[in-house]
Amino acid sequence: MNADIRNAGEMKPRVLTVLGATGTIGVNTLDVVARHPGRFEVFALTGATQVERMLEQCRTHHPRYAVMAEPAAAALLRERVAAEKLPVDVLEGSAALTAVATTPEVDTVMAAIVGAAGLPATLAAAQAGKRILLANKETLVVSGQLFMDAIAASGSVLLPIDSEHNAIFQSLPRDFNGDFQQAGVKALWLTASGGPFRTLSAEAIAAATPAQAVAHPNWVMGKKISVDSASLMNKGLEVIEARWLFNARPDQIKVVVHPQSIVHSMVEYADGSVLAQMGTPDMRTPIAYALGFPERIEAGVSALELMGRELTFEAPDSARFPCLQLAFDALAAGGSAAAVLNAANEVAVARFLEGAIPFNAIAASIAHSLDTLAGGAAGTLEELLNADQRARSVAEAYLSDKHP
Image 1 (cartoon, rainbow, N blue to C red):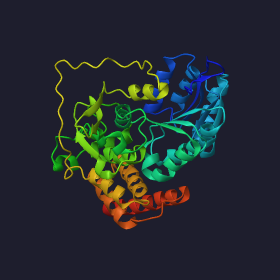
Image 2: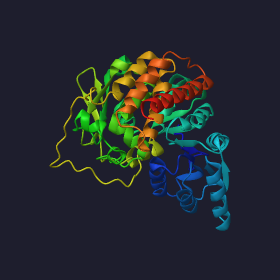
Image 3: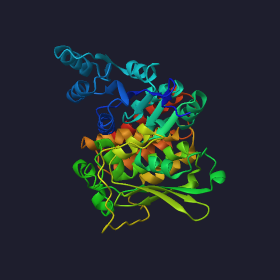
Image 4: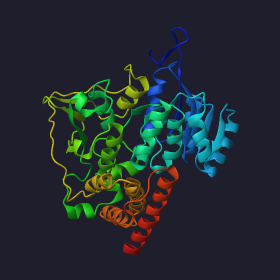
């Protein structure tokens, strides 16, 4: 029976918590939600420090709870909410994030907190059996097997939001169960735009500024993910995510650079067929697909115009963009290697955005961290978070030493 149909055919709204509501994915999620009055009820919105944006979202979407990760931001939001007499309870901290993701009233969680910070609440939502719309790729990068085991044990529904994984999900058979041979699947092809540095020399990339790195040619994204796109680390993280989402071996996951960002990803079948999902580069498309699944709902996205367009494809250059190969290396190493990769990358990207290190130090720091901490245990959340913290310390020390 369709999970949306309850009480003898009465359609009830999905009750939604948005983790990371003030970020790009969160804003786009609420844009889609607003286009479908009565279909969704916003239970809780969470953010880190953007008080003004959260306040505006509270005015518009009337959540029962607003959670700010930072206490100072929560205190300010609480004052503003009280002054305007908005019927919103303001909470703070990681425990509150988990609470609004797991409360029985909520059936759907948009997991869009950037970085490893989103892991505990998202994992808790999986353990609680929620329908999870996963935009936080670091959840699977850091905790792959642990997270997928939680999904299986609770019966949670997992729907990918990354445009690439959503495209693969749309291009696979509806009854795909992770068995490539049974489904006749030969390979998954993740497309990459190539980012803003695709045509630059290694020397020019090394000298790139943060402003250049965040100027993505096709997508509107936050600063951290834009830098990851520029280094191709974003695609590396997506390779690891695809391994867990689709039960794929590393050799069954391919990456191709497609500068136009029209083909969002492809599935290659044993009979020679390749099914591709195409669309305008707008994150509201995968968000709407997941929000409405198994139905398709309007997303507010402009129509794709193909007439006169040229679609090109090229192999990624691992010499100029070593982060992609580092991700494959971490996947092959297993254990906590992917958690180390992710943590070291987060540290290095933050330092780069501060202007403290050159762009090519990002990959160098990640490689050093992997060499130093390879082979750690990854069976529990505590072990994974410990690996994350150790990797941050190693990366910080390396970057401080090399770029004082």
